[in-house]
Amino acid sequence: MALSRNISVSEASRPKLPRHARLRFDETRQVWVILAPERVLAPDEIAVEVLQLCDGVRSVADIIDQLTVKYTAPRDAIATDVIAMLQDLADKGFLTEAREKTS
Amino acid sequence: MSDILADSKTAGTAAPSDGLAVLESQRSTAETFGIPLAVLAELTHRCPLQCPYCSNPVELDRAGAELTTDEWKRVLSELAEIGVLQIHFSGGEPTARKDLVELVQHATDVGLYSNLITSAVLLTKEKLSALADAGLCHVQISFQGNEPVIADRVAGLKNAHEKKLEVAKWTRELDLPLTVNAVMHRQNLHQLPDIIQMAVDLDADRLEVANVQYYGWALKNRAALMPTLEQIEEASRIVEEAATRLKGILAIDYVVPDYYALRPKKCMGGWGRQFFNISPAGKVLPCHAAESITGLEFESVRSNHSIAWIWQNSEAFNRYRGTGWMPEPCKSCEFREIDFGGCRCQAFALTGDAGNTDPACTLSPRHEEIFRQAEREAAAHQDRFLYRNFAGGTLETEREHGA
Image 1: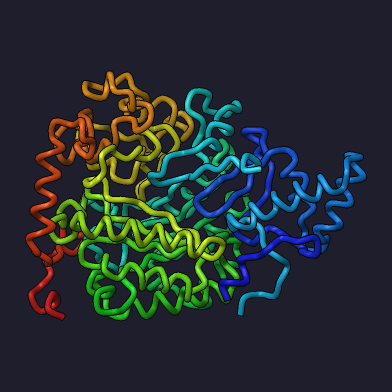
Image 2: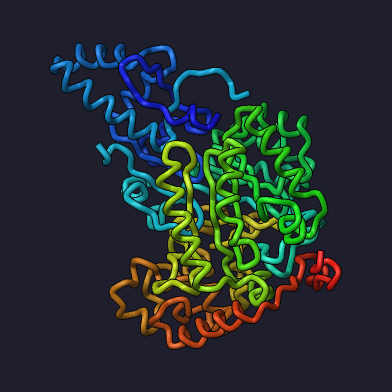
């Protein structure tokens, strides 16, 4: 059951923030933060942009396509960066795949 | 791309990393010392458990002294307004408060991320479900062992362990994230591998392996709780192995007992630097043990002062802030801004002066003596507990101990 958390991010993944991780703008400090158990994380601008696209509906491929158009950069380079970043987040427990409720 | 996330632990004793610097570099309401990211709300000192290492002060607040529902709501609103992001509802046992659902709902309404730190034994499935509906973000359940014989004896409550397992399952059924908090000491450290497996089996996201910190009740019980150096070395090895093996499955936070460390812990991230808690009666404290330091006056949320004012200006918070208060050997120490001289409460408890270097530090003139005493106590096998209660503690009977 717990193994389902250990996700491997690929272009087919449809990642989203798990319930315990909340992305929000901190008005006091004027930064974006991820609120998680016992932690507050300060994602950088690019991470915030990618995370806002992680809605459990879009696939990683969709996200890469969208960023490729926006930044008119080589798709390969964007793909490598996005997947590495999402995998890093997933390994730390701040990203999950859209899935059924734990039974 | 490891720098995309600046990570900051919001409470407890781990060293803050770059995340805090990122957040503190921004202007906040409290200009000098940024308002903490997270605050611990100790709703009550009432608790059905009697753990001999309880982190509450030996002088417990009575039910009649507790803040009312409206007072707590006002506090939550004020915290959110000044920039606090997370609220940890703790105790005592926070579910002993009949208004907990209402308080969690209020935290949600004002935008606070809420965490419930609970012994779980008073929860029903309906109550937990109501808390989830009110927006509770995370549940942390304390465990005293991995099986009922030791766990129920440490808790001083029959069937506590079984109830905790049940509540942990409901927590995951409700899709709430779960942290298992395991407080470790000489009498349960041998269960550590099983406790780690229990956390995996319960589908927990996080496990806190927290060695007992020795002040208050735990100091009274030090002879019964102090591990041996061999136990600590074995525990560190087990945690390290498990953290690697369970990467992506279970995050493990490890708190070492500082009696056996070379450097003291950066307690609370430094006095008045990144943490405060609010006691059941409304005192704003630099740490949950701070009231054990006699001679310090702590301001209350019931005073005419705002919480931000108390944080920035009150004498108790400024007394040990930064490095200006330090005597030698801290004053000229190259580590003074790394550990801020360790723990004030421990310095007070062990040396009688909260302004001394924490004896956990090898540079303290008292370190050797205290380290030896811990070793002697660990070897002496005096295993009877003094249970925590409002009556100043009750010594475990021979019969309970034999059970």
